[in-house]
Length: 519
Image (tube, rainbow, N blue to C red):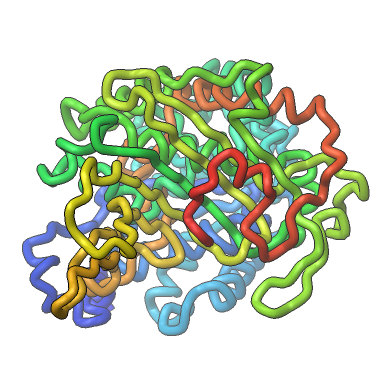
């Protein structure tokens, strides 16, 4: 099937072609040819997320016509063996109807190659350079090179060093871009060291620090919601907003990531990157244009206006917890300390919450509550903006409770926007109740939102850094959480575990903010 036909078929799923909300939309085709090199291509992230994202782009017709994929990892494969490996992973992780088969797969497969490599051996990077030159000549990739670091972070400096030694940091014929997975450092000092390594080889406009949360459709729509609607912007400030809650909750435990997680914890793993990135989008001022740096300038400005809590004030501005045994969906589950590769007396938090204030004209005095945790009742990520209550009550029966209005940006599992407002109950009495208006992306536009990695990889190929975090914002996020991190690390919590799996979290979180939205 030709590319255009594939794209049409993909976009027509769910009767999307007849949807008036999609009329007049331009093609999503990426025209920049390129070779994409995935370091750590035998790892879990590549097979579960990155490979399916790239193949989905091929199916939807967005991938460049002249494209090549190179795997670069320690596991022993030749080109054919790696192609077979990729096909098996796609058969497992692609949804029904998108499995690798037919002419589309055959064309995709011939563009796949592999280098068995030691990340410390410059010879293998020289072999990579030769393979890239072959792709340029045989597959028309035009000297455009995308390097994706999907390895454990400690390997990043070695890869970057050897890219430089092999002369792969630039190509006179095309562009070079490097994608760095989170975590970007494990604390402020390590983040600065990693940045010094990267910036010695690649300029900022070639560095794409990826946070897959920013590729989710509702996260992208925060800017549109705020700045494409005059009904919201006039009230998006301290005069009308009572508080903002940003939640990223999971019902899962640490699964098979105990060794990593016991050295990370919820503050590092989620708050420092995902959740603070959401805060920046919600709170930033209007950029002067849609240019990537104009948007990222405003994100940095708002993060700069957050005063990190002093060490003496950490306990009044934050809460932490660790889950114990409990029940999830009717099934008994172990506590964190019983998980594989977790220390039996671990001091690592699986729940983190913080209260932050933005010291600027728009948000002075408005608390922003951030929370993230594992083994909570359900998986939910959302931003909830609670508006101030009415100043004077003259309507409704005396027994009625008139709730403040709430706007909820639902990120997952449901993607959409919900608004709570008060309405009169039909009948002779003046009873008032809360009602909701809901918008769902899939229903409204008649298409399923593409996975975050699909959007973000496409943006790298396009050279669009809007949804990628600039170094100054990464550094500032670390500065904000560092006092909390230092106090928590240096204080043994003898109450751990302090919340049961399946509960709403630790009591200290309720003390920090009694009105958390119920999970």
